[in-house]
Amino acid sequence: MSITATPTPGPLLLSPTDHVLVMIDFQSQMAFATKSIDAIVLRTNAALIANAAAGFKVPTVLTTVAEKSFSGPMFDEIAAAFPGQEMLDRTSMNTWEDAAVIKTLNAIGKDRLVLAGLWTSVCIVGPALSAIAQGYEVYVITDACGDVSTEAHERAVERMIQAGARPMTSLQYMLELQRDWARGETYELTTGIAKKFGGAYGLGVIYAKTMFGAHEG
Image (cartoon, helix red, strand yellow):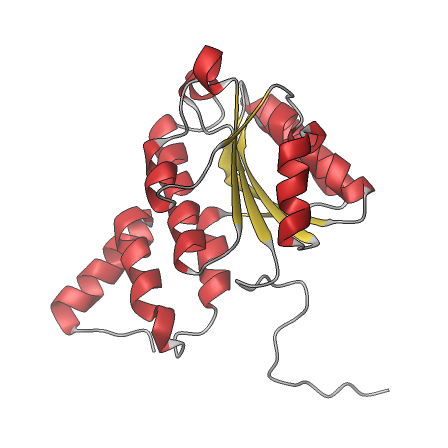
């Protein structure tokens, strides 16, 4: 039996309208003990996905744990991408056990979730396994997560993959939302975020545009 290829994206690829991004506990107290990823890299990756989601108008839930009593505010880079958006503060370590978060997710009405936050083995594993058990598709941006050790982070990611979660990276997330440089309405958005938060790739974009007037499309 022969297969005929068509120039269409696979159903497992993300688009701006088919999922909700949940950013969990990007707070000072959680970051202090995070050792699996450098704090600067973590903040940059978190800023990249926050700005990408905001720019592509992806429904996004921002949630904190014990913000005023212990853990501190959400990273400025994330809050700045969503000015005025409410931070849903919780007492539960598992975001999925918080009634306000679940009410918000139900109101958005997407059955595909993308998760990122601190710590991987607690605050990400909890909602990931809980959502999968209730029939949701779950993606985890692993380089925008961190834990108290590399061992803790890696075992958490493995555990989620075993349950059916799909790992990805922050830059991959943004480029998957863009996916075609001919989409002119978001071209400057994507390359602008890359130049600011995209590390070596962003430097390459700056160089090409400055020296040669290059354009990916």
